[in-house]
Image (cartoon, rainbow, N blue to C red; front, top):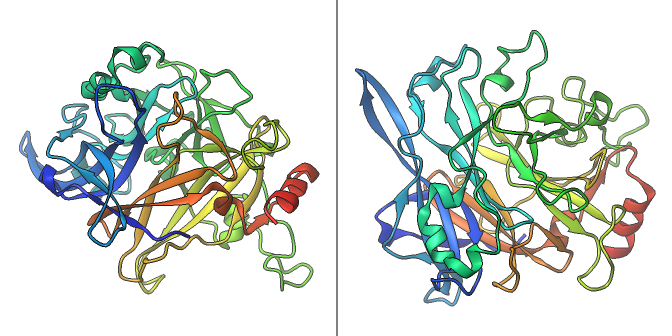
Length: 416
């Protein structure tokens, strides 16, 4: 994949990592190219006599420029702002993981333009709840960062819907009976927002984990499971790997997804980036339909010593149908970034189309020749990004069992 480029936020006074990027439209009250929200260093904080490590997220505006060697660079100015600082009670309890209790504050923020032009922000925060200790929250960026609406200006602001998430809205899913205290339902992290181009423009989908797709209903209700139990399951097409003999292909018994089969591992795999939709042809050469358009997002599995020689993330792109039943279709080979080294692990949390300000609302749907930007943190110490063609994310995939003939056809004829 492409060489990674830097995000220079030194003028803000913050050391940033794990960024999420939102391209800004042209024509507002500002010449800025991007909104960048990123994690900065935790700080120690004493609350009611108890010591905590407070996570902080800083917002800044950045422009695309070039360094002295002619390499692309996102450069921020002096202005910055900490987000959702005073939200939520510090009290929470992670059963079986008491060390997590000392960590508070917003984490894992992800930015996402909806089809109607809503700039949304999803993040993790502690929850004072009987069972859940960390939950997912959704807020409109215009509410979390009033400066964004000022930058958009009245003309662009009039083209997008009113704010429907004016304060952090809790997202929760119902745990299966008897599993309320399971770790996966105690700590809800890294949900991936997405939309189908063939559903209502206001519908908001959330991939909680591979194959677990939900629909947002309201602030007062749990998210609604979109898939039935059968449709959540998937498996890699045999033989896998290609040299496997009949009957030797390993399949996940616990998670039962194509992603886990490809990773040859049955432990938790978390969503990494927002979901995008992609039509499998070059722009202008076909019309999007349910057969040629897919939904895709990145997933990651962290590996640490002693199981691995060093900390690293196994990154994959998972591809799904873009309309019901949203079946998983294929999973990529490992994604490696040029410049990545064993001693500097990379965590990717941002994926979005780059239009160079030519479209508004900015899209979460594109074509094979469109440009996608990935934003990531380097070794919990720095922030970077890279730009690639969308086609690179869907090349070199392992097919899942039952992938339709139409998907196979478009892969064979459009990606050859």
